Image 1 (cartoon, one colour):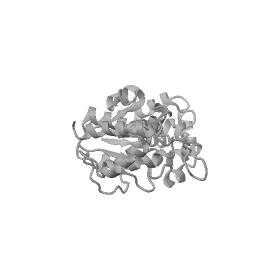
Image 2 (image 1 turned 135 degrees about the vertical axis):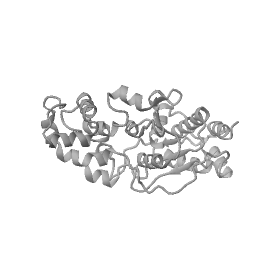
Image 3 (image 1 turned 60 degrees about the horizontal axis):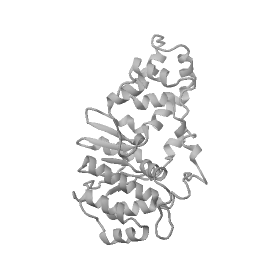
Image 4 (image 1 turned 30 degrees about the vertical axis):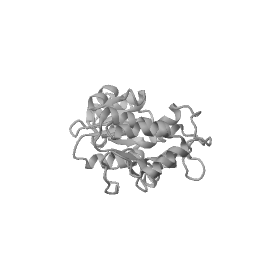
Length: 298
């Protein structure tokens, strides 16, 4: 089980009341919410291996170099991500708690959590569950592996299981074609413009007809007219520069330099004394006891 940790702690932050604070008044709603999320996931799915994947770089240079607008609307001061004032100080606490628990926590300089997930998925020898609130990771869904996404759109207790059939039904495309579909239609939430004038329906029609973005472009080069919605050929030609670089931005990496690390789900804390100190300082006894109970199989 691979956790898209930033996606989950953002959802915890907005889903758990900010009235939950540490004894000294420090906000801990995201910390508590994430701990309870992990407890529920472990209880319901019993993963033998578990990794909390992190953003070591939320806006990697290679993506910005290709498309400067990538996540540009989220930039605060300098090149820092705009994060709510009461969430930012909780992220280091989350990292400390995960480390003391012994849950593998992985971030790679120059890469996003998505890239860590993509690389671990590519190297996995068995089934993979990706827990995320980010549709970008639907591109990793693969029934043959199998790899599925557990999508948190309905909350952690009512996850949407995303497999190839779901992708096909939801978007009208082949089950493994989400990245090409997203490249064509764009994603304003990530600052990806897409091809102007090509929306969901046209993008789905193109990918369904030709099978992939590469095949669409080959057909365009070859002068094929059948299968292109009216006016779309001109729009694609006008967007050649974007289409030359966008796939490398949209696709998650499968070869990030992820360090070798034991992903075995811990049955007991790595550092019990530090965990007790964190629980006392931040008032986390309840959620940590629940998590420790499910980790140990109680």
